[in-house]
Amino acid sequence: MVQKARPVRVVRGGAVGNVTRGTTNPNRMRRVDRWITGTQARRLLAHGHAPHAVDLGYGASPVTALELFTRLRAVRPDVRLTGIEIDPGRVAAAKPLEREGLDFRVGGFELPVAGRPVLVRAFNVLRQYEEGDVPGIWGLVRSRLAPDGIFVEGTCDEIGRRAAWVTLDAARPRALSLAVCFGSFERPSDVAERLPKALIHRNVPGEPVHAFLSALDAAWLAAAPLAPFGVRQRWLAVCRAVKAEGWPVFHGPSRWRLGEITVAWEAVAPGGIR
Image (cartoon, rainbow, N blue to C red; front, top):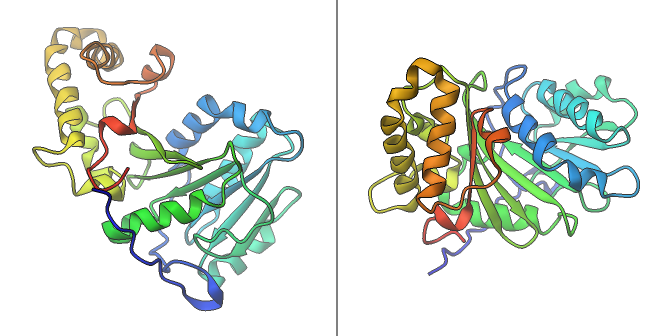
């Protein structure tokens, strides 16, 4: 049974969405940005000229949009980035920072940009909506993507030590990624408080995401003898163990050693959101 999408709210000027709290900090998005530039660079490189990216709901300060722009340009020097915010005051404050390839505009989930972006990042935005809003919002953003584009939607803590995000393409959700700073957790499931809105209320027995987090914790406990060799070695053992158990884990040690693990969406998806 697929959960019925609720209508997404339209506010001033036809923008779709609500004004959020807008709190942010420098370098807060470094984990997701590192994953984007490390695993999704091919999407930027495949485009013939000036691929377009969007930072959706960048908040009261444009600092994380500027950071994303800099990080993407290290991969593709002609990439364009548009920072979108639904609060006109936040956009006005960011306008003086515009430069070649970087602009800011008022808007929401409808993505008021020309053409179809190859990347949309929305972090700490949907967390402030209802779970029932998620399918409609996901569907609206996905409908605006380039054919090979992706939508990265997730949440992180205030200084970016723990993060989780869903990657969607134009067709459907594809994966859940977790990323942690070594030393910032006692067990892998501590990241649960940063699960995206589609999953944060589903971390209960009987739900697939709870089973996945429990498998990570069990593997973490089993890898305790590796603790003297450091948290990274223990985390690598956890990733190998859950993959060996049959969880559809993507990538390999080069990503795992960064404190990341990515699993196919179908393995953790709640019954109503596919």
